[in-house]
Length: 275
Image 1 (tube, rainbow, N blue to C red):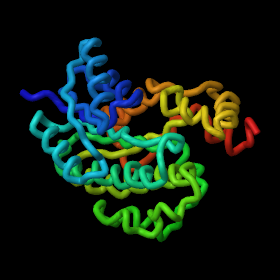
Image 2 (cartoon, rainbow, N blue to C red):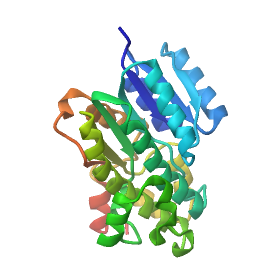
Image 3 (cartoon, rainbow, N blue to C red):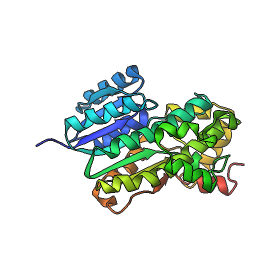
C-alpha cells in the first residue's frame, strides 16, 4: 500500500519545520523555485532521518505547478498539501509580491484541487499583515479575487502593481487576498472530500522575519510583539504545530477559514501597544 503523500511548497524555515513536524510516516515531496535552498533543506531533513523527494517549481507558472501536482499524484494518495512559498516586502518588489503571493497561490490551489485525495487537507500560509492591510479590499474586489481564473488574475485592476504605493501595502493586500482565495477554493476541495484552510502567522524569528525587523518598521514591530500577550517572536515550529492540527483529524470540521497564530500580535497592535 502506498503511503500518504505530503507536499510542501516552499523550502524555507517554515516549510522545513512543517516537514519535520508532519512528514514522518509520509512520502514527502518538497518543492521550491530556489534549487540551492531546496537541496540544503532536503539534506538537513535527510540528516534527521526524514528522506524527501524534491522538485523545482515556479508557482507563477501554471504549467510548472501542474507538473508538480502530477508528480505528487504519481507517488501515492495526496493527503496533505502545504503552501508556504512567498516573498517578503523587505526583500522583493510589488510586482513579485502580486505574482508570487496571489497568482502563485491560485495556481497551487487549482492544480491540487484535482489531485488531493478524499479525506485530505491543504493549508496556505497567509499573514497577520493581511488582517491589518493598508489598502482594504472592497466587496467587489473580493468577489473578483474569488471568482477570476488564475491565468486572468493579473489582469484585474486591483492587481495592477502601479496601484500600490509600496511593498508593505502590496503584501498586506496579497495576504488578505489569500484568505479570500482559500474561502472560495474550499468549495472545490470539498467536492473532492478534502479541506482547505489558511494560517496567518505573526512576527517570526526566521530569515524573513529578521529581514522585516531590519527594515524601517522593524523597531515598532518588535515593540508590538514584545508587548503582546505571548511577549515574544514566533517560531517556525509554532506555525508547524498549527498546520499539523489543521491537517489532522481533530480539525475534520474546519475548512475555508483562517487561523491566526500570532501570539496576540494583532490585538496588541489594535490596542496601540508598543506605540
